[in-house]
Image (cartoon, rainbow, N blue to C red; front, side):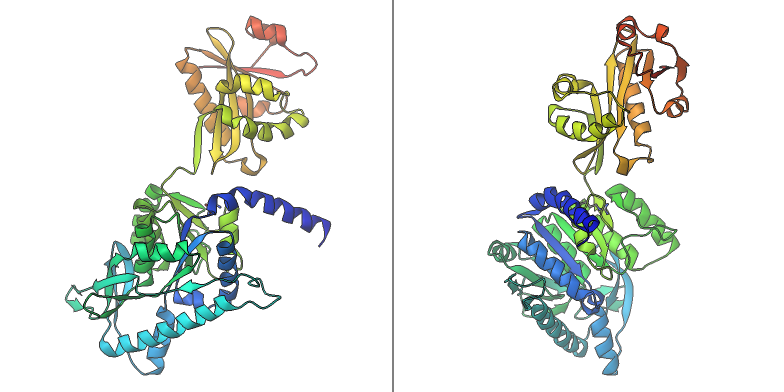
Length: 448
Ligand code: ARG
């Protein structure tokens, strides 16, 4: 391994530590459509899932078989009808299932199940699965009922989830097994129903109150109108996007995955994440880096702005130390920071402090804005501006009418935001006496 590679490796591994700790014992439901199982990258996906299992994540895999069923039906010369319909709040393309079709479906799903079990049993010495020693458990975990008649169409043996056997699934998970769910459900009268994998995955995630619903799709996540990946969406933003997608592009996989994600998050699931099944390692990057590689849909606020507390001291120090070394900020000791922590505001991103600012009142009229810093990875996205607005608001609340700032590096930034150049003489008495002539900072003032 080259020096640079091993450095990257070490830093990547370190960055994962908080996530490794956070995920131990958590429940993740993974939705794998038939296309994902049939894709060459499925081997890699199986490796990555195995890795998660070894880190103590409790996994439920829900697999679909739509494309495999289609191709077997086709070669048997059989045709089925499908309909675009809203099923369980999600736009989906739902098959009408008759007895002969169900027979084929059972065969296809059964074979896929066996193939998946085989993939997860692989333990060759030089494979990533070596020593993994994991067990998949599947069974009658879904109680189903008929989907029924919609717009005059009788869907026959197509069903929908009526109940998820949560206790039975939990028992398997507690025993360290990975639960493998098919898209078939059973009724109390002993009938078998053909379900959509979307319904199975989403209902299971909600019933288990899963920590994550991971949805494999054919794109790098949810894309915007320009085809760019959207990195994160709140449930509300996602809802607005759904309306837009329905109006513009109609019913497609993207819309369906988005709706699934929102549905799960609006119920009990903490995070839904859409990633690509074609992209080797997407699962690992999404889960173990802060910015991911797919689309994260979440109920909770991912980025937050708030007053700092004593627990933030370490995080703030980490953020400002490099800037102190470059001379951009004046040095603050840990003790000083601890004493002044109440003057600080921070922006956190998934728990990590990525920006901070402090407000020091000087006299009854004026306050100093200080220590405004943003992590290099998160610059140019307006966060400094947001913090400034936050601090200004706070200063106004304290009855201040003047905000001043001393800077050596970024005068323009302040001028563009309503500050005007000022002089040492204009500083409040207390600050004037402390002015460091050697640093020769420029002084700017903004009336509030
Ligand atoms: N690794 C974290 C998680 O899995 C954050 C992922 C962020 N992903 C994103 N697409 N913005 O929860």
